[in-house]
Amino acid sequence: MIEQYGTLAALGLGTLFFILAAAGLAATGEKNLPRAERLLRHRALGAVLMLLALAWCIPQVRAVAWGFLAPWLWPLAIAATVAAWFYLDNVVARALGGLLIMGAYTFLAFSFASRLATGLPGAVIAWCWGSVGILISAKPCWLRDFLRLGARRPAWRFAAALLAALTACFGVVAMAVYWRHR
Image (cartoon, rainbow, N blue to C red; front, side, top):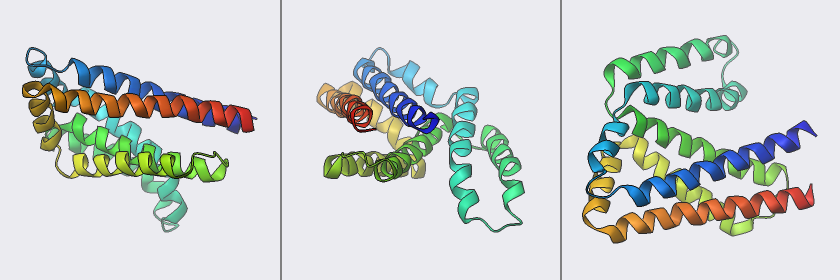
């Protein structure tokens, strides 16, 4: 019973994330671009999001880690967050990339484990956002460059916002399907 509500909560949080992403992408025009670029470099927010992504990752790592490494996962996550605070740039972008990767992985895992009948559309959406997360994590400056492109050319901005909005709609449908078949 609790696992079912946890799954619904995770789907709901993912849906909320993509609603906020759609609104944020649509609003990032020429006049809001400096604020969006500052947000991508915000160290405190980046550290919180990074620790959240690493905390989300720890159970998956624990399943495949060597036995002697398991007690060190939390201290390593905290040390990585502190190191990112001091030595990395675009920490929010990197953390968002990690959250997208973990979200895509978790959505696919939940889909199979809970028999959520999303089929190929669910897999394609998860693969797309996981790939975007990998690209952002590898080159966080690409997110900044994409925001700049979207500020100059609204079609790019609204296409990204539309993809995020469609993903949010898919999240609502996934929650309804899961609730109906649980």
